[in-house]
Image (cartoon, rainbow, N blue to C red; front, side, top):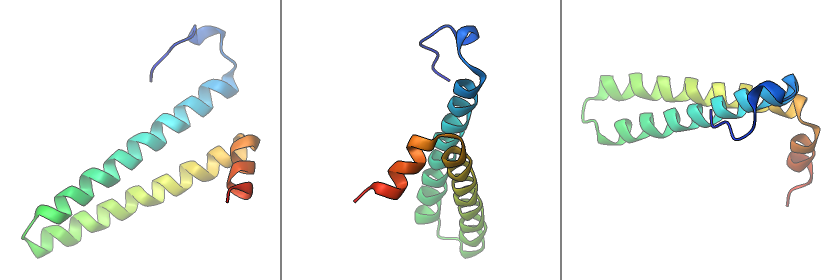
Length: 83
């Protein structure tokens, strides 16, 4: 995690939200990596396995986003209000 401020001085709520957001970014990166491998492989059994793994990462994305929405009211409102 990029730390631009004194980590020890941050509120625990801020630290937890940063942890969740960093994890969200990592899960999305994993989705992209699996998709690239799926697109490249010629092996059908490997493709199915990679698709399964990709979809599990998507579930992790959803779980993290749900947690973030519950713990960041402004972020939650943005999901409700965006066009």
